[in-house]
Amino acid sequence: MFNALMVKKDDDGKTSAAVEQISEDQLMDGNVTVAVEYSTVNYKDGLCIGPGGGLVRKYPHIPGIDFAGTVETSSDSRYKAGDKVVLTGWRVGEAHFGGFSQKARVNADWLVPLPKDLDTRAAMAIGTAGFTSMLSVIALEDHGLSVGDGPVLVTGAAGGVGSVAVALLAAKGHEVAGVTGRPESADYLKSLGATQIVAREEINETVKRPLEAETWAGCIDAVGGEMLARVLGQMKYGASVSAVGLAGGAKLPATVIPFLLRGVNLLGIDSVMQPYESRLRAWERIASDLPMAKLEDMILPAVLSDLPKFGKDILNGQVQGRVVVDVNA
Image 1 (tube, helix red, strand yellow):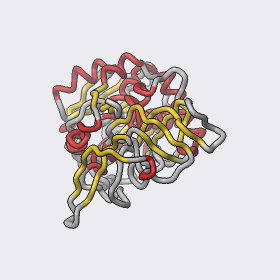
Image 2: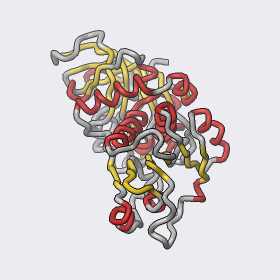
Image 3: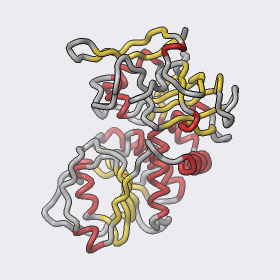
């Protein structure tokens, strides 16, 4: 028997989450069983712990969209007992039991070997949020962003994706402007390498003009909605925006003018179904590019019993940095 955070739904449709003891035969099918060491808390996890958000297919359910740990058993030749592995995406923690458990059984195709320069705790300090940040940076680089082009804007900068994005961009030598609605986060963002703090209220509403002064050489946007629409009109000619989130809403009240007159690129970043080679590339870049001391400053430690609270907090925008869950503590 082992511990897992189990989410149940009653006859009235109300969900509740609590740590329970379960057995391996309660896990879902898969060809690799992993002894989970660390997981983390993402926005999707908040939805899956709480109201479901349309993501959870079946109850009872174990959330946790990412984890890192050690292979216990494998019927796939790519992995053997003792191998250190990381999992992000593939709808694990949504349609398949996830990482808020001391054991997980998954498909080998969903795993990536842990980069040699990372341990499992650091891997989950990075987690899906950091993986998504790295994909976003790579996309901007692949579309021409270079150091010296000008400031790169990061929206939702104090959140999980934003924190890692700020640190990655600053470490590469970019000027980084961080958008936050929390004035108390300014020192935190500067410690990660931000050179400019932009108050959310300065940029979170659209204006009548479809184009404003060319300001940003690139952008990683975790907010969407009106803020993304506003930012598109502030991008430099030929610059790109990596769109990674919708905390500010799914609607995009923008015009096509920035695309037609300035050649702005809007790049969709999906971290869930990325092919294996893209995952390897991103994880290897993270291991080489992300300053580990900065990563340590982002960490909020947690245990399984803390997760219902952190799930609510992340949905309310009250989590700064990265929650790292020691599932065995």
